[in-house]
Image (tube, rainbow over all chains, first blue to last red):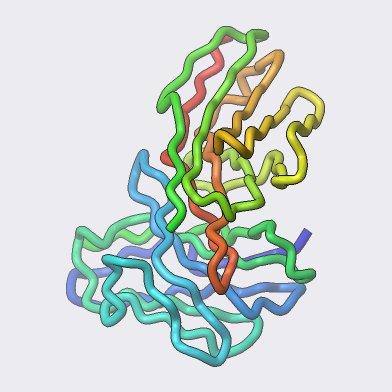
Length: 116
Length: 113
């Protein structure tokens, strides 16, 4: 299957700083990627849809100025959490549709963000 | 948009017994229903999926059924084993400009040896 790699796997940052998370499709081109957030013992909540060469589409209630998404190439999407606060601590996961336009989603390994 | 509900939220079964998890969805346009298994701190893993033109699909100990009229779909795990213990998520595709995967709230399955 298609491989999606996410980096870093975990990060600890100080309150008020910004953190960038990368999501790469390693063996296929992903026109569209998705970013999810998962709090402990909860489900994956879709934050935004990332589109190569255009602005991201954010889900209702997600602050676009706080969660900056850039999809600069067909293999890379980045999520930047700006001015992070402890309540932003969460598990962030990206996904991409497969190379054949499959409906199946391929997930990155996730990033555990802890803001102290 | 699509809304997916899932029951039960927790499920404990004895090893060897069957486990059933049920989900409902709201958008009649949805046509793809994947099921994921997630272990703590790891990415979701696709375990089985079903498309709306099929009523049932089976893969070894795992089966999924779909009732498109009622907007219900279910996961059945037979002969459960301790390694089946995990959180299971059903999902449906929200058909907009992009196929968004919308997850149910999850079921924490514990298989007791």
